[in-house]
Image (cartoon, rainbow, N blue to C red; front, side, top):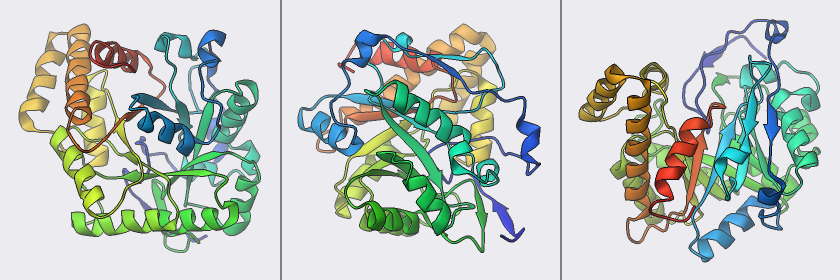
Length: 342
């Protein structure tokens, strides 16, 4: 592969800090997170391992559900991702971020961090629905076959945070179509949707064209990318339906736990927030950590409920981009549970 690499932002179903293209050995101080579960919680998972079937069942029953996105890499050797904090209802599914630049340099795909953690969760917690991400960067047909032979039932397809002009799969739609040809209906494929358009694409019409190509290629679900405006989410969902995109749409949600991470995210992704909302976040940041987090949980809950309660769009699912921080997610769930069963 050439060195003609372009760093991009917000191209996948997640957001990440930029990662320097250093030898993989520099990541030796990273650790896989540990997990804690409650057996009683696990018994409540659906019988199917196909996420598209589980989601369809939830929507048919008009039941709200949520998923979480986690990182397989931690620099804290004691990090414990404690699922017992989610209460009686666990996430319907867990997705794992794909670090395109680093993972492309791991020769054996089974040794990739996110794959190892996904397999561990899949093998040890058989009730859980696991959806590792897979990006186009550094991927060719041979490596894709090695990945699909790992027999994951659900995959989140992203173009990736890096892009090389000579890579085999230049667009997520091509990767979706190839996996669908190989795996037929035995797998669930989720893709990203951009409520305010992708930063590298000039118009919403062009962005919608790319999304339609992913759907036509065989995508089963859409996870929206970070957005801070309820109306933008509603308009995006309605536009999808007007373009005959009728597959389930799941709201991708980020809950900031401090002002620095929020500002970093906005700079990285080029996603905008209304000025009055940003001023509110800054005000509560000046009041202290607890005040900021309380406000953030309230603000995000309000946005989610506005979308969920909108007539005729039938949205029942939420996917939290956790960055391995469950605290703010549980705060939002506590607020949501005052109004809906989730």
